[in-house]
Each structure stands twice: as C-alpha cells, then as structure tokens.
Length: 532
Image (cartoon, rainbow, N blue to C red; front, top):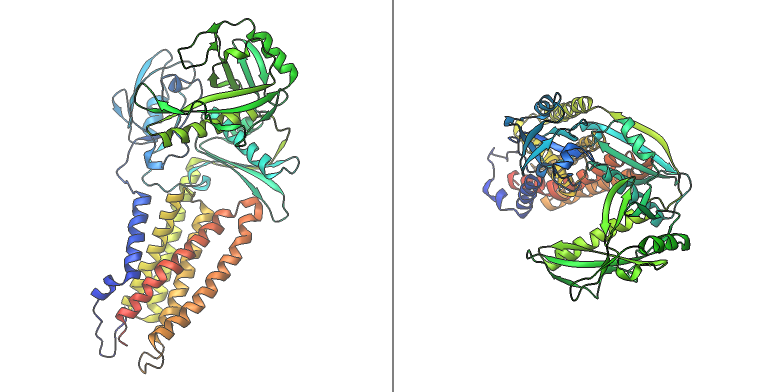
C-alpha cells in the first residue's frame, strides 16, 4: 500500500468495485468450493477392496477412481468402537479371529463381515480433509515405468492402456493411474502409479498376461487373443441398439441397450457350437428374444467380470460373427445411454484384453512408504511457507514499508489457492514436482509484481508518464517473461518419459493464474492507492 504526496490514501472502497478485483474474489470462492476443506473429517477412508475377501463378500463396493477424495466411503466404527483414523482401523482389525462376525459402520452404510482365514480385504488411509489429490511422493505407493517391446500405433497403445486398467481394476485397485508417456527421442513408455501397494504386488500384477476366457458352465468357449480376431469399436457395428432403444424399468429407471460384434476363429466357433448344442431354449416373454439355459461367463485372470445371456439362434451354430449386447440403467434417458456406452466400452476392453502380442519391459520401479510420503508432505508445506516468508522479509527490507509487502503477500497466497483449486477441479495430482512448480510460479509472480510496483513508483512525484503507460510497459515485460516460462516448460512435459510433467504443467498453470487473474487485480490495487 503506497501513500501519495500528502501521505493520504485513496478511497479503498473503489478497490472492491473494480471488476478485476471482483473477478479475483470469484476465482478464490470457486477455488475454495473445489478444494472443499473439511478439517473435521475423521474415520478411515477405503482405498481398495481385495477380490474374494470378506469385505467384498459382505457387499462393500470397490471405490471408484473418479470419486472426489472427500466423497470416499469412510469407516467410522467397528463393532460400535469409533474409528478416528487409519491407526484405529488397523488396531481394531489386526487380531480378528476367523469365523467371527464383525460389524463395520461407514459413512454410507453398515456391513456385517464373516471373517474367513484370509485378511478382511480392506486397504484404508486417513480421511482426506480436502479434494486435493496427492501424488505418490506425498502419500506413498509404487510407480512403475514400462516400455513396449515394439513401437505401437496410437490406437493400439490406448487399447493396451485400457486393458491394463481393466486388469488392475479386477484386483480391486481403484486408486491408480495408467498413462502413456514419451521422451525427447520419441520412445514410448507406460507409467503405472498405484497408491498404497507394495513394489512386489505391482510387479506381480503387471507380469500377468491378462488371460481372458469365456465359459459356458464349466466349458471354455473361447479365449482372448488367439480365439478373438476382431472386436468392433466403430460406429458401423457398435453403439446403442436401434432395434431395442430405451425403455422404462419396473423400478422407474430408464434402460438403454447396446450392441457390438466380435469375430471368432472357425475353431472357436465350432467349439462354441458343440457346447451350445446341448443347451435348452428358454422361451421369453412377448417382445423379448429367447435365450439358452446357460449364460456365458467372462473371466479376466480367472476373475468373473461379466455374465451374458446367449441368444437362442446361436444354439449349435458355428457362427464366427457374434453380436454381444447389454444394457445401461439411469434415472434419465441421457444418463442411461451414457451408462450403456460406458459399459459397452468396458466390455469391449475386456474382450480385447490379451489380444495384443506386445511384451512390456519394466524399466524402473520407485516405491515410497506411506510414512516417508507423510514426511515429504510435511516438509513440502514447511518449505513452501518458508519460501513465502523469505520473500515477504526481502520485500520489507527493499521497500521499507510493511503495507507495500502485504498486497504482494496476499497475491502470492491467492495464486497458490487458485492453482490448488484448479488442480482439485481437474483431478490433477500434487506431488513433489508439482510443489516445486507452484513455488516457481509464485517466485515468477513476485518478480512480476515488483516490476509493476517499480513502474508505478517511477515518476510518482513529477508524473512524467501516465498511469496507463506505466502499466502498459510493466505488462509488456510480464507477458515476455510469461511466454518465456511457458516455452521453457513445454519440453519438460515430454522429457524423462513424462516424469517431469507435474512440474511443467503446474508451473504453466501457476504462472497463467498469476498473469491473467492476480496481476490485473494487483494493478487495480496500485491504481487505487497511488495518489497520482
């Protein structure tokens, strides 16, 4: 805050009427809504549910990877004993005896578990207090860098990634990320990040071949890869079924049917014909198609992932072209059609899993314990606060006015808050590299505001230049620095197989927030409080 010739400030009410300041306030409110701070949240949040465990048999759902952190199901009590954090959860479950029934109360339901000889199958962590997602560096987990044996076309690479996600989801792992990456030499990589899982567990999962089997009863009709030669994913032979359309269900929902075709080898078609030839035809109600007495079960790595009815017209028929159909349900037709298409894509991925004869080599594995990740998180916060404090001290020494350092400090806080709000909104993980990017962006912002302040101070006594010319010159320098930073960060997105992507993108987001949101607001502050 700067005084004029007579040491008087301009009317501060004008500042709150400036549209640039109002826009900054709106962005801050939006960031707070996106972050959704809930410091009072307690319990143990469910990270994953192990397949065939006591927890899954009791009906505890596997958490969706798309859930906001604060929306995750949290365990609040076990046998009426409160669970405040993950330490309480581990203490109450570590000595459970087999063949004993326990009651688990969560924020969404109450479950009764019959403890078998296996662990109860729940991986949990302390309840999130914000929607800010943290990377493996800050929460613990395993990162694996893989490279395909040969370079793949873009479509095949995306199919491989979908297959890997499906395979990992089958094992109850939802808190994971599978993405492609390249280096500056054009080499292809796949980066797999899984929170809360050890290095040995990840490597054993990724080493599996993704075996797909379709069984009718106890007989294998066909398997993925060698038996399935083609899975249609184009609009010509897949999508919502126009002959069935959408209709109301007895419970008041809307159901939409989808269909797509696959091609089997002649050997697989004959095998399927021999199996279905012994089945009975179940008559259907008027308006519905008849089906056979046994369904076809789809297994991925020996885990059941779907069950489909077999049309009566396939009985004893060695058909190589098979149409697969299913449905999606929702409260509205739009939601039902979206769910149907999502289910169709999932099923197509299951059917094509294992059909890509591509070997993946493990290049690098990084494992971080949860305790070490917690220390990293605390150190990152401390370093960030010390960096901001150091900047404020330097500004006070340089300008010898505390009131001038306050708005620059507030602008730094606003930049960090809005950047974190954007990260929470888009689901971007904040790791150590991203923290470094935020600090770099804040440093760039302070430099820009010093440039603006110095330009404003020049000629304040003699009024040599107009206010508009001063800010125009300042923003010319700022935009030049901004474009330089962005151009410098773009190559880092691809360098190191994408492992520096967090630093580069967070820096770009941070400096963009500063240039287009906080800098104009700071200019409004200077314009309001400088006595021209």
